[in-house]
Amino acid sequence: METILSIKNLFYKVKSTNFLVNKEKTIIDDITVDVDKGEIIGIAGESGSGKTTLAKLITGIITPTSGSIKLNTKEKKKCNPIQILFQNNGQILNPHRKIDDIVEEAIKLREIPSDEIANEKEKIFSAINFPEQYRKNKGFQLSGGQQQRAALARLIAVKPEILILDEPFSAQDYESLENLSALFKKINIDLGITLICISHDLNVLRELCNRVVIIYRGKIVEIGNTKEVLSNPKHPYTQYLIKSENYDLTHKELMDRAE
Amino acid sequence: MLKIDILNISIKSPTGENTLLKNIKFELEKNKIFTILGKNGTGKSTLIKSIMKLLDPNTYSIDGSILWNNKDINNLKYEDIIEIRSRYVKYIFQHPVNSFDHLKRLGYYFKRFTVNENEISDLLDYFFLPIKEKLFKMYPYEVSGGMAQRISLVLALLTKPKILILDEPTSGIDSAIANLMLLKLKEFVKNDEQAVLLVTQDIMFAKKISDKIALLKDFTLTEFMNTNEFFNKHLTELITEGI
Image (tube, rainbow over all chains, first blue to last red; front, top):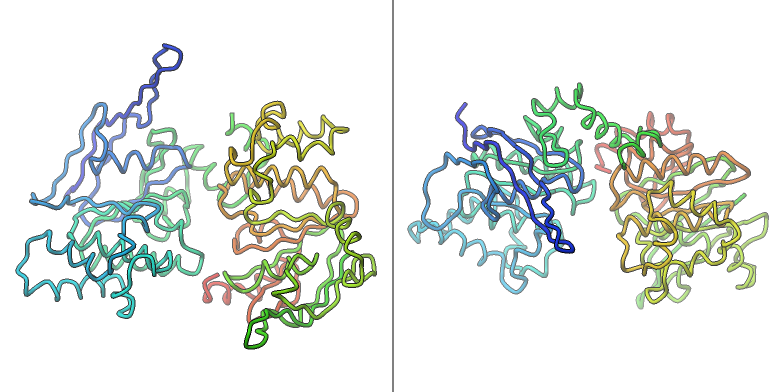
């Protein structure tokens, strides 16, 4: 299998000064992982474990303290081959512009012949099942779920090779969960985009991802086939996450973790 | 304890009345946790608000009886309903931070419980909340949604109510805290003559916490059943309908 993204010994540290004492906090602690082309990989961990920071490092929004991130993607002029769907995704849409225009503008960044634009737009909208009647709507006229789809359309319009999804299910109620999961699988297969899905919800990852990475305090504690890791967890933290998801923890276990 | 027999709840509109819920009949029993499962917009919150007359009579019209100790609360004086709400039937709302006055420090709400200082400390400790010296000085806008929910629950528990009603207790909080809440609520219904009624769309939470479950759909509530029995009967329906 061809590797599309290779992360080696990645560190991210932040410094803070408190009463003239310099403190250093390690947010990402020696992470090494390879992502295969075309796979769906999940990153799990509780809030504050460093999941979103890792996503920002991969996309280049922030620079690592040390370590390397190597990409095996085609060079493009204007578009970053890695795109990220943020948690509060409604905000990436201009509320006063039509969805149709927003997506068209993104397609034009790819500098393709103008007679192909309409065709390309149709392809994108149908890939994410975006209903015809909402395409002429403006950002603010859409519901949370529709905004998320529109944001997704905007991202795939630049033809990324890797798409990072940051807690994509948090805005959805239970009903939409399965539909959304099916949609991501469709994007993965139809458009050949490698997906990195960040979530605290193991059930979602179990359904969606081939492989899963468990992160605890910035470190990878377990990595492997999703079904194997989640049905036979080796690390105590993974065991804790699974128990907590099933509401099976005792008060003592909860206290121990809190300390 | 509490016997609910609602024939109809409807919302008034200029063109007439739209029915939200109809034919809802159940009775809460002591030492049990009752759960109502339902999708978004089925009327779960409306139903539990109607129990203690929390719905605005200008907007909603309710036809039915709610018996508290064999007295219909519809016939009670306003002061008596307030008394029941403040001492016997406590609510924890979905966004509990809105239950607090943002200009008052949190200590204000604990004032009436000063007799049992230790109990306060124990509960704060149990729910991983800051120690009371620190917490009492904070304003409601300084706490997170999850913390507000726990504080709300602590306050309700200190009142020692007969019935606790919770609206979506797991929404917006992480599973460890939900787990903690689950343990405490189970402990709560064990002693004296207390009961819990909660509404949720979290199937796993419902499965783990409930003694009895009913499903709210198509404007009405199914019969309350024992948890295992409920899932044997409704599981396929829950999955296919996507709740």
